Image (cartoon, rainbow, N blue to C red):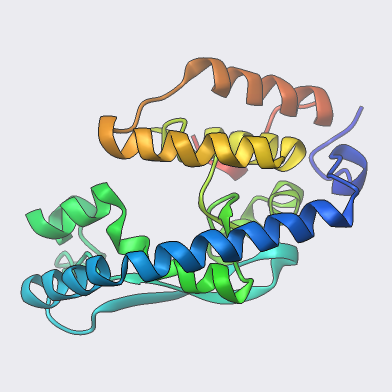
Length: 230
């Protein structure tokens, strides 16, 4: 029986054509460049809101795992304070935000600086969200499978529940996307992202079940909750 340690190359098939990735990269640059220019006024307003509500610095930066587990720095507008409990641990996210920065997160305006990472090639518009290297490593082979393609500003997990999902559910959706990646799917995810911004996050049970069944078939075992959350 196959296990979670089975090599990703055996368990998952990716588009073999180099042309696919070149076209995806071209479209990423074209779309990200256009959106970046159009959103410059919006980013300026976002920066003012962050400065007025949280002060400096304006940006939050952190090392994340990219394609092939290569580490890069992701940047986004800061939306939370560093407020801590008496024991030194960070307070829950909801207690470290203001009403204004919570709205920025809800509309994902805080993530607009990541367009620069798309233009530089560290990220794609669509793909699994970039995670800290330690988090990815904690998923074991599943984490390495997840990093076989570039991380994205939005992804299949983000349009199928996002913060309403457990880590185990997110990684199942991410791996389903890795195995089924296509330009058509990317376009669908971008459209669903716009819908989510308007209507809010909602768990799509059918897509989640499909991802779980796919992962079970390909690996011959369920993802271990002790490693993937949930």
